[in-house]
Image (cartoon, rainbow, N blue to C red):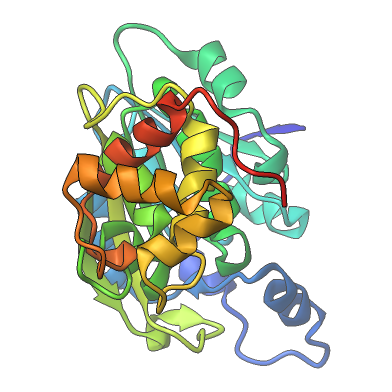
Length: 298
């Protein structure tokens, strides 16, 4: 359902933060949804600067909430489509006189980004997806925007610090994981800065990070079977403390095939998954894909 911006006087979005309530139904619902709203003007300014909204930008904002980012973005971008699942925020979001702001009272996980963008897209606009992501949906949402990557140019997300560090992690780091590999193949990833819990209401129990994903002109590696590659990575990292060779046994190829693979790719037998580069993982996957035999049954 689409809610056009109403023609009403501007309201300061900081005014909507409750000091105390007799009934805290709203806060309990907020907690269920994993929402933590920005309440610090300096933090908002830093985030807006990193997003760098331009007049030819179409910005899709995820989790508009109380509009901390929404209204500032609308002043500078060509058009804002703000998505907010909690419809109790819609009247406040709609109370601003900004003709380039459209509000969707929908669950972002049920929205087809490709379809949404296709309706708006033309050769003169740049597509950005931004937002202060609810912690409870950050990972499925990341894979949702990954799937729609051909439709946009950049994402800028505020998210849980440990998830951001996992996306940007390099080989040899304990945070290095399948999420690191698949996102770095397609995007230039960067953590801009960290934010403490005190800049949010209600304050989360962890620090947050602002991360950007800029789509590469071409992927680092071409993956003919992206789904298969992700499943392969999950097997490789199945038990992080085990050697990679031991994890690869879960593919149920014979020990001789795994040995042949190591010899062909000149891999040391004492390697763990976190020590391989992205390129080495692609080579490993392609080796197993090239075999004309199927894995042994469980």
